[in-house]
Image (cartoon, rainbow, N blue to C red; front, side, top):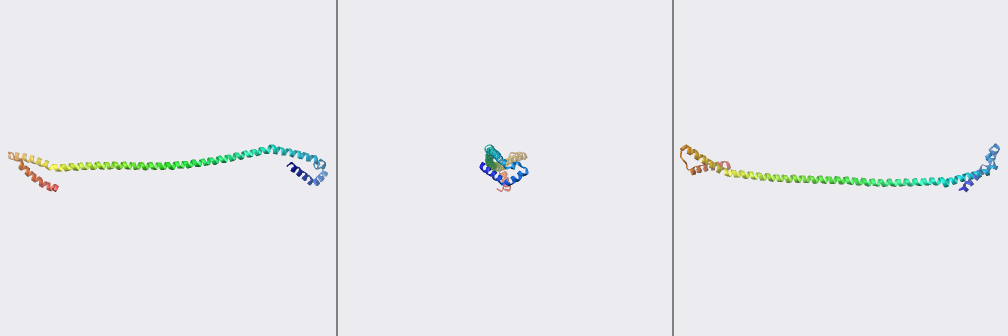
Amino acid sequence: MIKKIYFQLIFFSFLFFKEAFAAESGGMPQLNPEFWISQIFWLILTFGILYVVLSKLILPKISSNLESRKSQILENIEAAEKQRGDSEAKLKEYEAIISKSKLEAKNIFNQSREKVLRDINSKKDLLNKQIDEEVAKAEQEINTLRKSAPDKINLIAIETSSELIQKLIGTEVNNSSISAIVDDLSKRSGDKYYGN
């Protein structure tokens, strides 16, 4: 590299050789050929020191800084990608939990609804059974009363008729004849009301 710089300096100095002679006559001492060797020496020395300082001290620091920044940027990008992947995984997990919760809530609602309907139906069946039993019981009581009512009515009618006749005529009457009359009347009335 130093040789290349040295060669370029010599080349440019010969290029401006003609202008240097013209400038010397015009009063420019730095272009005087007798000072060229010292100027080239100091030029090579200055640029050589500058090159050594740049190549050995400054450029390695700049390059290490660039490398560290590049590695830091790559680490940041990798961390960001990892966090993005984690976020997407968490989002999917959250969506799965929400859908699972919705499904569980729907199942619980359906199970509760079915249970309530079963309870309502069982209570309704029980109530219908109790009502049927009460109705049957009431019908049985009505039938029992219906069957026993004519006998009780006949008995009351016989007793009442016997007492009335006894009060009217003043003597006891045979209960069997009154009973036959009451039975005959009650039979006629029974046929009329009960269709027997």
